[in-house]
Image 1: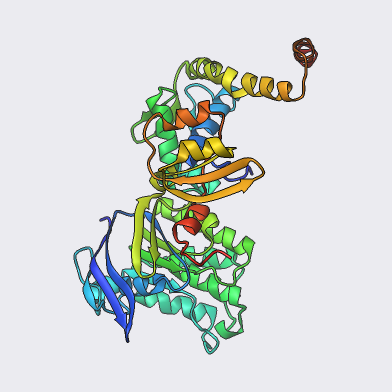
Image 2: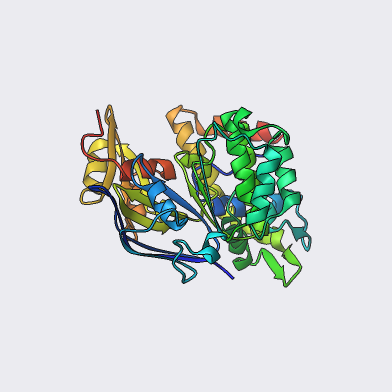
Length: 121
Length: 293
């Protein structure tokens, strides 16, 4: 079982991100049912209200939708939407941090590009 | 029906000592509340008023609009689980469960037995022969299986080892999710319950220091690290809980709602920003002069 949410950021944000990752990686399929907030709460040992807050974050973004009395489902095109959203923050989240570290280590631009090419092979 | 607890200007004096002074709050709805406070802050005294073990010296407590003290209707719906001395309790585990069943209208015997198994409690053993940790586990079983509308766990984990506490938290969340009710956890193991509770009350020296949702409280804490001079310059005038310096790097903990734009200002200054955990917030909010060194 994964560690409970404890990377310091608000837990509901981490719950939302966890669901996003599951959708991006394909373990949650579009139109498929998402575990209930109570299941999330029990699994991660967090307050059900917190789990609900994370789920609602994604409902507001149109990633999940609620079927009354049945549960929560992944929306159509959710994966596409998430890819677009994550692409926007990719530079800040990953590239900027990499460039910063590379600068500290005096790694040349050409070496960096080489590393990326090697890594993609 | 959801539970509502209301404390209105409650004070408690024992002898010449003001144990609680002028405490007012409202707990609305079936949530999991955390009651935090340092040793001697008055946590158990406050909880014993809610459990109608005592009457306030001044002010009133109301649970669903009724005064709890010596009131049967309220009392069998409030369960106060605390570490009591059970060194002379010759009743068996089974006997204790049967006793609880008689007094708790919402008792679920099947659930109680399931919990007994999870905590590996021997049904035929006498309570005084159980280890402290097992005694606490039995209290927890009774507390959960009673399914009272108000369930108070006052350091109920005493003596329980880490795996047993983990079972306790898991069962608590599971049962709360299925049967929402008002639960109050009073604890010193703050980091263990931080993700379980929805609202937190901190009492300090008999007074209510704050009552907030955990999310709100956490959003009021921010740790900022950067070059000392710049940190001093950009954080002056803010409420700082703690300052630490290592070489030329300074780290401060800011408390309070920041004006919009302030965070961006820190970010563009290249500061490292981070959250402050509930436990750390608690430590510095209840720190008094002379505590350090």
